[in-house]
Image (cartoon, rainbow, N blue to C red; front, side, top):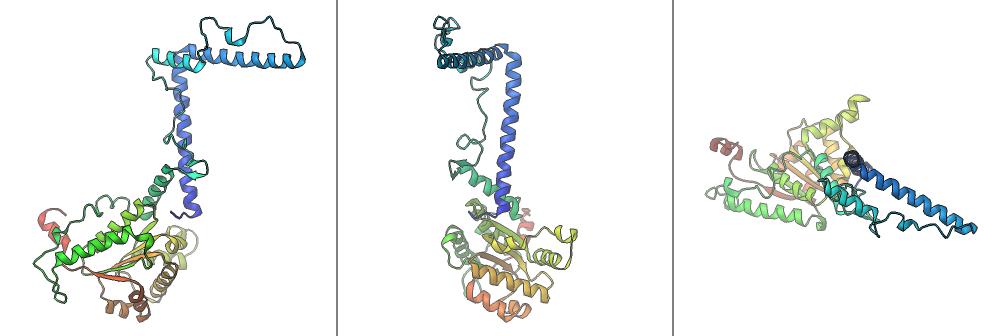
Length: 342
């Protein structure tokens, strides 16, 4: 769970908001209870008076002026025995229809008291706050509830349609690819080369599979960024060639593109290839591969098309480091539309 400084600050702002909300709830409860049960205020006043009296007696004892004939503070209220003020307040709350703990501190997380830390260790809720942030920053928060390993179905891949090269049916080939991707996600932190190239014609499930991996990694507190190739290179061009407000509105953080745990580049080849995109693409590949930072690329292009469109150097880098998975079958988008499930 690696966080940039800005991400850490964003998580801690969540805790700041929780603490403010805790305080608001407590103030509202205090106002309501004390307005309906005046005796609560009387108990507080008596407690404060007793504290002042104890302090006065302590100071007199030090000076040698203690009045030994005065009754002790603990027995100044007959009939109460040793019942604490808090116990009396709880009884009053219950007698007036409030929960006994109505005035206890309120926390979203009772373990860390909404600080994010237990001692010097991050609380379990801190990890969830990080996961929530990663969902927001991934650009995939809406779609991952629908497209994940749990919702993936092999039924869309025909078992009577064989790959002309391998002779393996579309369904059998996809079952193997699905298992590989699930293992890729579960073993992610142990992979020496966390790089995938998903290729195949449109509608074969490349984007769906990348979403499956993205959800599994975000749920295990890995930072993931998703970009279509067109948006990625357009945003980088805006940042490079525009200035001021126009560049800032692109919203891209080039450092985070290089440092996040997983970068997904979808639909490579749909952007307008030019010298800039080729240079940026190679730079991203080179930096992330060198740092061991995962990349998933999906494309309709064949390896030869990638070499022709970008450069043999880029294709060589991909062939050297990436696992190539070719998805074969029918266009699932069309199948779903025909079945009325689109």
